[in-house]
Image 1 (spheres, one colour):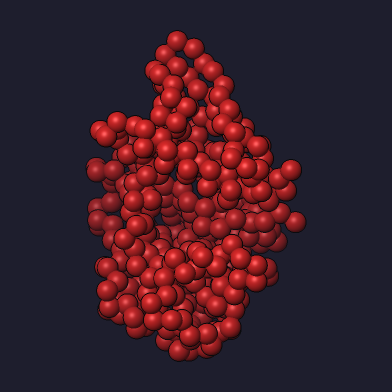
Image 2 (cartoon, helix red, strand yellow):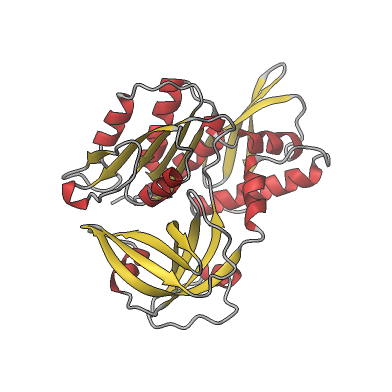
Amino acid sequence: MFDKDNLEALELLIDTYNDTDQDTLILISKHYLKLNRVISSKIDKISEKEISLFISLEDKEIHKEIKFPKTADDANAVSTFLYSYLSEARINAPEDYPKTRLEKLIENTLNLETYITQVKTKKIISSNIIEITFEGGLENLPDLKNDAFMYFMIHREIDHKFPKNYSIQDFRLLSSQENNPYSAAYYTIKSYRENEIDVWFVLHDHPGPLAVWADKVPERSLVAIWGPRTVFTPPNGTSNYLFIADETAQPAVLSIIENLHKNHRYTCLFETQNKSSRFEVNDLNNPISWIYRDQELPGEGTELIKCVEKLDLNSKNLYVFGAGEAKQISSIRKTLKKKFNLETKQMSFTGYWRKLAG
């Protein structure tokens, strides 16, 4: 049986595939299951033994089960199995079969590099955010704009010296081993200058390994980072934006706003703990609407979804960018899609982190 954390992760996985990556499920249905006349395909349910698809054909609707090659211990194993089905379906598909959104994302990561850089300075932004400036080793980093984010890899020994040729492959080789000394997480680049980047780290009562590291790490300490990646892809003609973010995603939104055309309109909803965790932002065309969790825990705030439900926006030429706790942001995506009848291309929602049960 999956535990509560993995059940929640699987719920999010099913939701993402059914809403955003149906093209992958259709490819799997056509060229892994080898079905004809497939119109749509959705995940119905997932167990430790199999995945069940609900598939619409031209003349009927059917259920199809795909048995896993071995018992799935967790949500990550299920995700790996789905990738393998996608890979085999691609091998069986005609050469001119269009690439899926997921395949394009995977392809875009193949040429990303790993950089070794060091802590230059630390600065307090608010009561629960610190900014670290990293310098050195970033000469080949491409020009970073909008929501560029990178994978930060740290060693539990703060004074650890990364090998010169350390790469994401080295990290992955150790990630499944017991007593793995490395931890990692994605962080958005707040600002970029030649050979320097600024990154915001959120501190709270139950911080993850990266936040603990950021709080304690001294200057000149080393970190390995891999990337950059981005998910902000508004369609051509977009002139109206809605931004929704908790503390982890606010640097991404601020960076995006800096690059918007001056005639473009936007609405910005920022969730934070309370007034003491706010920060001042200058030179914004539109003011930020701050929503406070107060006594509620990060990832469990109810005021943000209430504000989203009350929004009155023109959906024409609208693009929505939302990021934060995975389950919370998934709920917001469902609400907005239904409320404004948005197409998938008009939305980008990303779970920057996931609150564990307990």
